Image 1 (tube, rainbow, N blue to C red):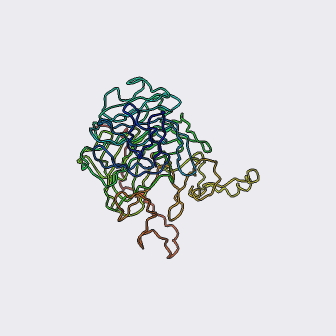
Image 2 (image 1 turned 90 degrees about the vertical axis):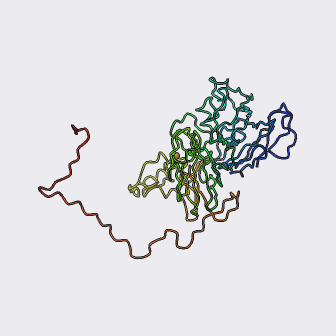
Length: 460
Ligand SMILES: [Cu+2]
């Protein structure tokens, strides 16, 4: 669960029974609450202030606050962190309050919010509150709207959360480095009427990516496009938790993209509508059903659907390289190349040489290859029927009957009703492939459709 560190002698040093409210003196900083785990934490039921339906941050958590004279006070600490990307791999990132991404901030439309930001990084920083309506001087753009937050100093941001919706936060100071290192977080401003567009389960996460050489732990921050770890909230499959929902639950998933490319996010077994964008809730008349929605860099999207098909449904980015982990992208395509002759000769020179990918790359998902320390297999994850060959931006939506409200425990693999799983044909052997007949050649005198290129077309 949540643990605490005191960054300033005296501030928050008294034992506090809950992580929620710090009863320190009026002039002191709010306690800096730290998370030491990368697993999905239970939603934070609002302990004070106006009611709302909390979100669940996938492989993340919500930052507790204290209420002071009607203002919600948060304390973010920008600092180097160690984030487990998936079991077997840890990364040296920069983030907030012990993790990357930082904690989700949840407030209610109309809340007065004060955020203390302490800089424990080795260089200056700032925070931009992406998408918010706020006074210009609170927008967090270093040099333009404020001086940078120097190393070791704390700055205060204060504004009213005017517009409900889905937001992000990230530095606007040496962004290339700081965002490549994992500095970002989610922000949700709930509507003041908790019944407005109410859902049963409300998930959120950020799309982010890293370039970490196998065997190392620190991202290469100069990489522009060729990342090798594609992550939901700085986790790669199979390190990403499933989104567990009850049968017939109304489900919302909010996604923000802070990578360097777009991600077509795809769900199996259901259609959804995009109910929220960067600019707020979409008018109902503007919505149409989708099974994939593209999320561009810097965008946020909220999708909604009724989970009325039980099962373990894949949920992933549809760029196939984004559902793979590090390694292997430099491997030449060997499909159709018979390497049997070659391997004996090469083995004399290189004893461990393996034939890779002459029938496709699926073998690699089952192969027990020796990996360098601290990296992830390229294609991984095991389901109830075997190797899945997935990594990166992939998880499941597990739809189950009879889940209690607020039960987010992984229910295990779906128990398929008898006769509903694809099965092997055990009858006659497949016949020889039959060629489709060639189109009959045009007979003399028969008209053949003429197609002209637009460039050759003259006159109307
Ligand atoms: Cu993608």
